Length: 295
Image 1: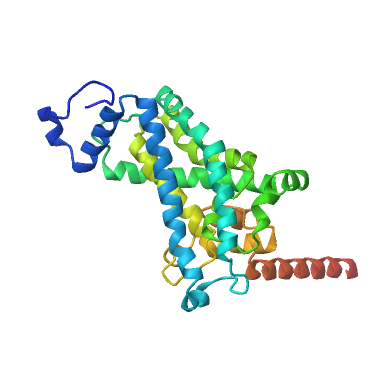
Image 2: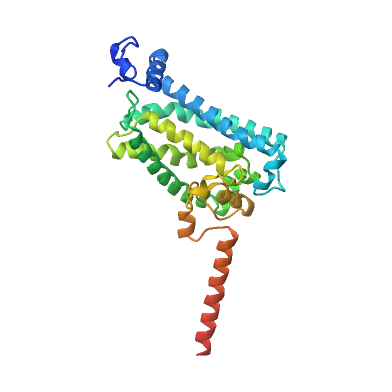
C-alpha cells in the first residue's frame, strides 16, 4: 500500500495498479510534499466547490418562472441581492470558522488511525460507512438543533440561521460561528468516532465523499424546492426540503437533518398532518377524561 509522504515516485511500476483517481490522489500528496497542508487545501477546495456548485442550480431555478410550481413557499422568492448578501456571510464563515478546523483535521484524524494512502477501500465499504455516518450525524443534528431552539440559546445562537423563513440553497451554512462548530461536529465527529472505535478502519477519501454528500444534503434541504424527482419521493424516510422548509416557516419542529424518524418518534413533526394528528389525540384524550368524570 502506498502511503502519502512515503517518498515513492510516480514513475514506480506499482503506480500502474492504481486507477486514475488514486493516481491523482497520490500525485497531489507527492506534489504538495506536506500531508497536513495537502489534506487541508484539498478538503477546503472540495467543500467550497461543491457547496456553491450545488447551490447554483437552485439560484437558476429561482430566476425561471416554470420552476415556481415546485417552490414550497413560492410567495417568498429570494432576490439576487438576498443571495449575494447571504453568500458573503457564508464565505466569511468558511474562511474564519471552518478553515481553521480543516487544518486541525488531518493530525486529529491520523491520531485516530484514519488512512489516506492508496489504494482506496472498496466501494461497498465506503457506502456502508457513509450510510452509518448519515445516521450518526442525523441523530446528533436532531438533538443539538432541538437544544438550539431553547429560548436563550435560540436568541443568542440559532436566531441568525432563521433570518430566512423561506430558505434557499446558499443559506444552508448561514449561521453563527457557535452553531457552525456545534452542528459541524456531527459531520466531522461521526467519522472520527468511527475511526477511533474501529481501530482506524476509515479512509480520508471516504471522508471526502461523505463530506460532499452531506453538503449536497444540506443545500438540498434548504433549497426550498420539492421536485417530483427529489430523494424524499424515493425514500419515504428521507427529509429533504419538504421537511426542513416547514421548520424555517414555522420556526419549530422538524429538527432532523437527513431523516424523518427522530421527529416522528419524538412527536416533533411540524407538517399539517402531524398537527392534525396531535389535535385529534388531544380531543380524544379530553373526551376520555370527561367520560371518566361522568362515570
